[in-house]
Length: 138
Image (cartoon, rainbow, N blue to C red; front, side, top):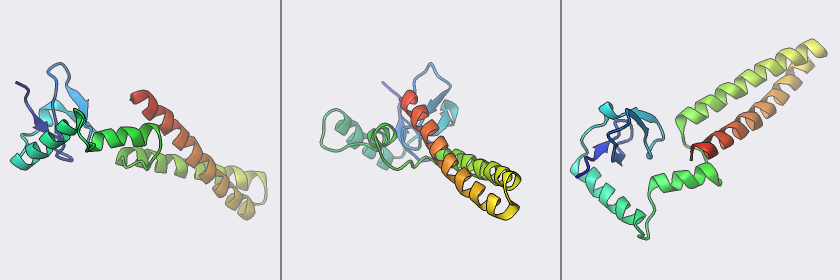
């Protein structure tokens, strides 16, 4: 008999294995220690039964299955950690672009041009990195 546990962050019901100390929650995609998992409520168990039946071939799809499609094929990234990393990368590229732009040409127009170029490079660079990172994680 498997022991079902709920993620303390999103309350997604998972079946932890005995051989690992941490797992990636399919509901919120955060790394959670198995010791932090909690007992699910009756309502959460009912929702788990419905989604596990759907994974066996039912018409409904679970949130974890949809997240895999959004990660690998196309869609909005709802992971807070990924969005935070991307925001930091964009801000760092904007700062570097502003510094280089002010150094290379006149200070104010160069800084503005550097900010715009840094924002574009940071957006595409971090997005491409996250795309390959998530592709290899699945």
